[in-house]
Length: 99
Length: 163
Length: 363
Image 1 (cartoon, rainbow over the protein chains, first blue to last red):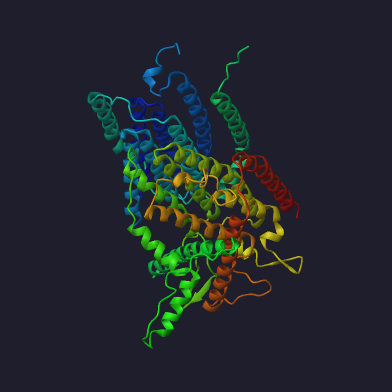
Image 2: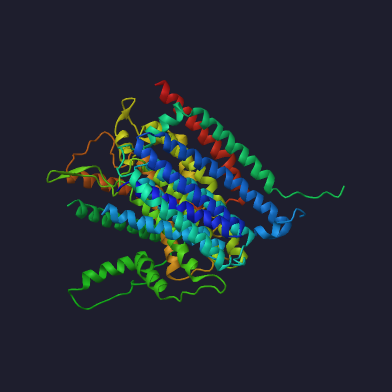
């Protein structure tokens, strides 16, 4: 299986995630599309690690997962906190500065 | 046989990714994302990165997505947002497709070979993590602690006292 | 040839998993009756009679099984569940209602593929390892499947479209993710002790003798890890005394309120298969697997068969132990459960890990 297939898959997934972030208005779905983008980048890290026989790529993926987990926890806490004030998770409903 | 399995997995990955972006209710998007994370774990296993494949299922599909599903259920979110106009979807889709179409031959020319013989098992990653990247490892643990404290503080309900 | 061996292994493992789950269901019904000082199910098939002289022995066996409650539990309950009306509550989607039992059951059966059932044996020059998939990250995969088991309960709770179900589902998810940590860290301590992640190699490492006379079983070298694993495992399978999510209001069944018929049976089967999985893991990591102390088994199919029977015997002991514990102990309150998981088991397992690592480096 040529490695270019993995890179192409990673590119396709990244663009699907980017389109999702731009088009969806529900904050949680936007967060999930960001996770798709992070996964696509993880896949290309692992592909490059296999190509160059260097384990550092996979260690990089490990750290990306750690950061994604931390970001998920804090981001969802923010969403809950915003939901308590404006009772909605759509991005268009919190576009004014006054809560 | 492995090739066929790879194409099926890739098709599932793209399909579930599109499902996350296009499905109406947030709970369906979350379940579609769980499927996507499973297919990504399968991709890691195809590349012989076994530790990362199982870690992906444990951390992403088993912990982060449970948290997202919890939040969706607690906030009782329904899919009531307005669908974006077909014009915007058309522009975004065409731009993405055009860029990929231009990039694909260049990618295929640069990576024709099948790569080395690296086995990403626990011992190899563990050695590298604890010797070369020990500083990043400690900082990552500090980051997680900060995230825990931050999440608890942000999600706490502030009682307004009478005095 | 490799495909043929693989298919035979998969069939045998699936048969064992379902067989253990069914036996556990029967033991639960009759065993609970014995513990509660009543008789239990003994009517179906207990009065079969025939005048035909050739069928008399068969009917004696059928009457015996009927009196023991086997026909009632295994045949009648299954037929009843198949023919019950399967309704989906109004207001939730059909797809997710059908998906939830699937997500509750598949991690358990997938984890069974990693369990080695007998020692290696040689047939016609080929060495066969009775393990469907021997990954080099074996124990981590089991932990991944334990993480996936949370989804079945959570989604089933949401699907009921009522607050009791949702609360049951969310509570069960919170309980499972809390006890997963203690489970995982005690597993890591075992991995540090045996130096390998593969379950087969862990059993092989336990066939030695430590101190000259004591078999090197995990329960003697790591008693604290055994206790933590057992308690956390029972909390993961949501069995009493941790079964608050299931019987939370004592009248409504928690997260499986809106399930009836075959879907409920799937959940039930998944839960009992999880009991069997926990018993299998405990025997593999702490009780020597198929090892009989002071005896080495030959590497032929006879030795493999003996080892397999010993293994099944030990698993049955632990299944029965879990069922007896369920019917003996009262249930924990929710805050007591969370206190136990986070404040007692987690620090204890981390301390165990540190002590294990230090001792392993020192000797």
